Amino acid sequence: MPEAVVTIPCYNEADRLKCDSFVDFVREHRQVMFIFVDDGSTDNTAELLKSMSKIVAELKKKSQLILVMGARVQLLGRTILRNRYRHYLGRVFATVASVVLRMPVYDTQCGAKMFVASESVAVAFRDPFISRWVFDVEILARLVCRGNVNPQVAICEYPLLEWHDVKGSKIKPKDFWIALWDLGRIHLAYKRC
Image (tube, rainbow, N blue to C red; front, side):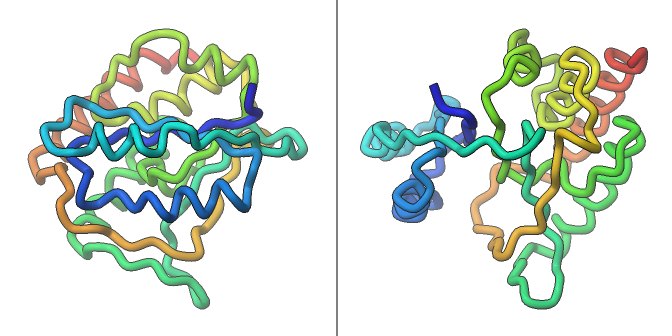
């Protein structure tokens, strides 16, 4: 059983998913396991993922961390290329998410996340999510509420060295409002923690 698993949701990503990058990463980091989840794609995503299905590895356990989250922060020496509109909407959303979670998280929606296999993580993923759009935020709420995780010790945000927004995102402007609605639902469900 791997110590950490990276889950990547996919919907019609056949033209955007860079398989070689994942394969190269696994060759260098034998401790990582990737799980690609096809969400009913109508293009060749399923076939593409099948060709990568044997990519399995384990992440070396380090200190007390159970989650490392990528953060798309433009800093000197880093190449973070994002759509300006999506970036600013994301900053508004991240600020609200930080308030809802009562933790200083910068980038809840970055897809680069690595979990260490643990009881707390298992508990966080055990039940269906109440949120369809912002399950990343709900995972953090569950880790704290159900997994009794201290986010200052067990969760780390790592500023990515490189990130390029790829054209073809399925997220539309109206989805921002749906995501805010889901944040409200998450707040009500986990506010007792």
